[in-house]
Length: 262
Image (cartoon, rainbow, N blue to C red):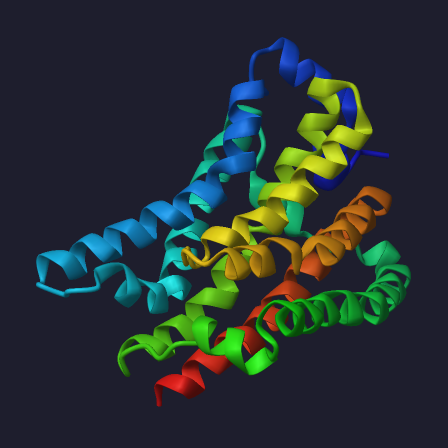
């Protein structure tokens, strides 16, 4: 039976061949591991520079509200780079998003179990850390959910969840995780580094120079990121299902920005 695209993507034998051919390298893998953390800050800096040129006195503070657009731009860059990297390996990254109809029932059941575990792991650290660091959820949420101009809010509402579905999990767990496995020869490295950087990327989305905010953003996603990594380590073909779930979660997140803007 011919292997599916997702099986080939995670195949250590295939990846070892790609490493020998020079198509998979430490450089490209580490680049994709850290790029989102860097690009969030770079994009916000560009927005702050525009505000500064327009005469805004506190340009950085004004740039914070635009974090959905720094995410959108970063997601588009990641999608472009993933397309090039997979093309270099002789495949197409969009093939990773194909559903396996022969295991549809099993996969949906697995996703149900994932959702039951994911809800408390995604929400409780968020709330407990906010209360511990700021004394209330409202105090930290007011720093995060800031209004956008009326013309920008609907664009963010549509593009933020869609682009993040294709730009985040496929980067950390579709591309980086199996390649770190093959390059390092240590599966714990391939799992924990993407988990760590998926969580850490949030310290620059948005970048707000408040140690409590940085701790909140860095730590709140660690349990959820670990669950995602373990799920995709166990059953890689769940990637398209988790991408859809991720988009829905971020749709709820961006909804708070949208309602604050209208």
